[in-house]
Length: 184
Image 1: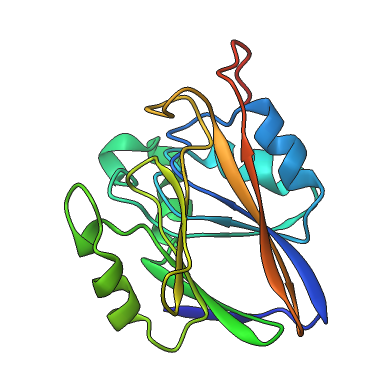
Image 2: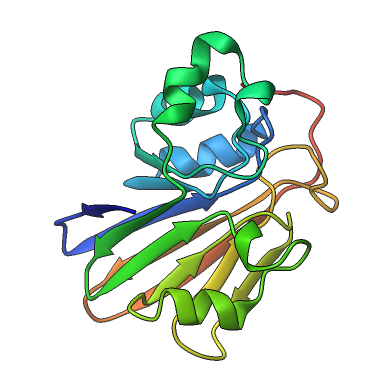
């Protein structure tokens, strides 16, 4: 697990997942307005990370179950090898932990398992299901940004933006209708 610390008193974090090699253009527009980007896996190509970095935001990403050498270009294997399975980001008044989620249930990761594994977190981010959700029924909160690309996106790409300050954390939810144009 990698741990990063973000020292600002307030920060906006774009949370995305499951791009599968392509990002919907409106998701990139959302990302461009954020301090950090968290990608919860199934990136499926360095071009996705390059497109995110081009927005000027700091990018953190984890490996998903489809982020395997056989599915990435051979010239990108060093980038793939640098991806962690889990990472943590210290934010104002709490810890955000991200992993892809597939180790907590094949088709639907268990929120109880994620909470037990990352009990020290304020928020646990996962992907894998391609379904947008925010579960604040217990702590830590469990969130899934849905699919930010075009693969099984349930009618359109989606993402979340977490606004984290010392006194309050809240989300903006974005859902975009399917787009024809493809970026990265």
